[in-house]
Length: 194
Length: 264
Image (tube, rainbow over all chains, first blue to last red; front, side, top):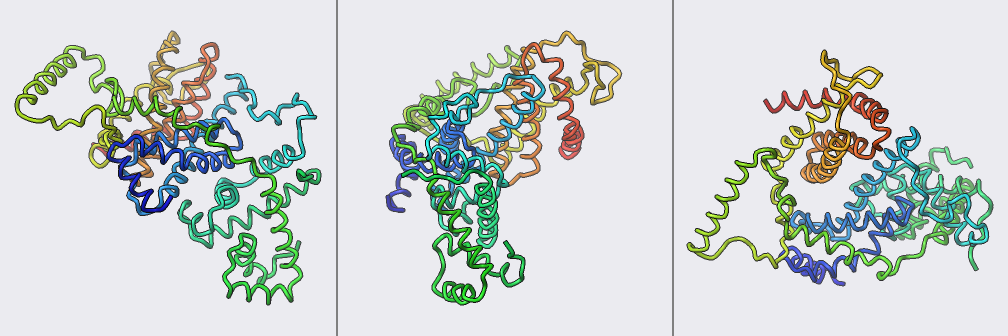
């Protein structure tokens, strides 16, 4: 999709063309989901966030000035939505620790203690290790790493989305990679899928 | 791994650019020249590249569009955004508890629309047309001020009621009159749920307008109300102590007092 084509779709959606908005959703839903998955590390939470993001985008389309690409704006909405989601999650965990609510069952199958070990494929173990290691990063490091590594944004694009200087982005990536290197090295050597 | 030397720290940006495949020709030449003489940086670069490679191999598979199907999930919600059913979008009824005044307002509205149909083409958008901007028409400038203050007005009574409640512990706010224990927890939880939902939307609008202080206060209030909304019926009394602790730790009553003074 060319930039001009995207601008036309945004203008049409803003004017009330639902079909245009549907096209924009289908174009960007994958990347939004992938970002949310990397930040939240839970596919169901990521699915919830994706829906929230596009509902917010629909409501706020008038506010999108077009100075950046739509994808940049959507990524920002996604990071904000992920933060809100994490805040609610911390609240639930706190309430669970006080016995006020039952702990929700983990949706990430491989994390369940009773999960069938044979289901743990090599690829699954690798992924688990990565997702667990991502939890050790600071939010800023994780956001930056996921945008760069999951969503394949350039350093400059990552800086635009996160509204940071490129030098800051490089520092964050450096720290993230170093921490991941340390975390992944403390687990069993990963066997990559054939 | 020793990378604490001054020169090595200076090369970290180049190392990251190398791992990301974004080295400019000039930076590449500089880095290669440095790596020829620095074993630590060579080792660092190898470690970072290996980590990046392992992470890439470990990435979850990208979802298929059919698996996500976001459009079919959000379409019913968007329908409600387009055609508010009385309590959506522009706001909840402004005059809860004043049915006679509300009925009068509706009658005036109907009369006005009928007269308008005689005067000329309606300026109201056709209901078939989706108007995303209508959803946020009230969310800027002076209207956002009103929405913010109205939210605080709605939130304060519940917050005070909870803060003043004695549950066997010490009430957060000192008050000579403690609230009766026979409180309707269901009604409170429902109200808290609505206030938590509204806090989420209002906070986003405030942040978008750059009003960070106000957004932070609304976010804190949202957390408190979310706590209340998630309490189970049987553990309500004990859970309120947790809510009171949150109110105290975030100094919410103080913040509300400050806001009240600002807007006098």
